[in-house]
Image (cartoon, rainbow, N blue to C red; front, side):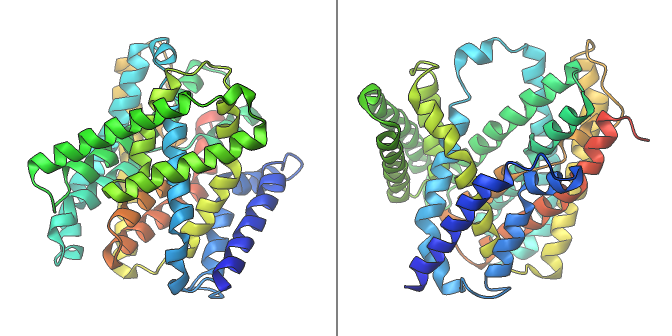
Length: 393
């Protein structure tokens, strides 16, 4: 009964958040930054969870797994649907290069800096160290567009770099999720090399096969509500397949979404269903992230601020020094890397993928470190993004 009541509370908050939190045009600007970042839902989850009112005790967390897998499946599908080859081919090669390289540079910088500090945390589970480092590096590599576009719109900013930022924030999540998906299969400690590549091959094949099955459904004859039911059932099924293979549904559905993006027509009703599912699932995942937050100790807090600092340096250095050489036609504003400081829910999704694949106290610490980094970056992002778009010194 407690589990059902808890799920009803989350569903109610998600509905209210969908209706009201995304319609805050009349609020003061700085309050809008808070609502659009989603940080309030993480804090709400913390308040309702074991560290707060304990309405969702730790024993209840296992019952949230199906919802987490549903959310992971949706994110993978959503990211994959952005990889339409026709659309990618329209982008300039140098913009794709900047997107990939800034993500890779920031991720590698974080990974190299964390190797020795994390060895202490993983003293009893050293075999999981490479995966954990990949997860933390990937979560640091991603950037969220929400606050950037809100401030850019308010500033009337329409320079070429705004289009570049749009490309970066839409595609660097794909790069990070692909990296984590590969790490969770190819770095799996309990399998030999043959088994790891076989698992990767199976994951790709299953993603494509699930996509093919979906294309055969008579979607044109279905009502919107029927399509939503099929969509949810499809996500649960694909997530279940991932559970059987012990592969995150995030990766399988990334493959599936990529297949669908390149086979479905652009006006297919399925696209509308995916977009409409974004707000409620986004809020639910943020609340659950808060519920699952655990105090990581002084060492974990130190790791979080280490990641924040290194990520800050990585984004700033690449956009300030390397990017202008890759595309001389763009006039990069001073501190342009600051526009990419916001991480958003994508970083949390990557943490969820790790937590559900290798549950345990160490995974909980890694996940909590990611949450701290996300919250801090969301708080400082409005000021830093404003510095870029409004030229504040």
